[in-house]
Amino acid sequence: MSPSLFSGRLVRLCAPRAEDAEILSRWSEDAVYRRQADTDAARPLPPEHFRERDEAMGDDHANFEFRIRSLEDDRLLGFVAVCGIEWANRHGWVAIGLGEPSDRGRGYGREAMELAVRYAFHELGLHRLSLDVIADNLAAINLYRRLGFQVEGRLRERVLRDGERTDLIYMGLLCRDWESSKGGG
Image (cartoon, rainbow, N blue to C red; front, side, top):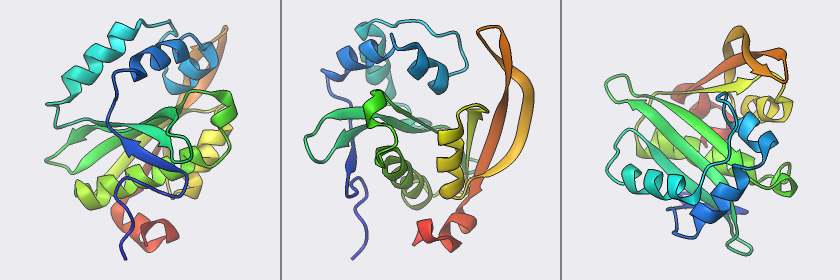
């Protein structure tokens, strides 16, 4: 039996819902969440920002964003995306964010990333995935390594946080490497 395309044991990937915008807006007020998810300056965003982005994504064939929901109670946990796809090169970027601190470190992110990677390679037919991560986000770096991503580069002192400079790390995963690892089976 082949694994489910959008569901694991803990989470499922689904389309955005209208009520998600309020929750995403609330998460945007959490500086720690915003600063780990993005290198841009953190700022709160209104629900309309997320509604408009969700509407625009419907016809976008280079960006596939899913909401992560708990199988246990259908609660919104975060998002995962395969984005910035270059179809001619069969390359895309992957990104993830879990909104509530209490939901981190419980296996939700790992399973959502496993589903997104499988989707990118098996459903979209991509050859390669890339991501970037701030060097002090050790939990994320460890997760990506466990999934098979390799460090491919480092931009020294690329990110400024509270007057301190931090490196930005680039990581990549090839389909054949993922297929040959335990994650690809």
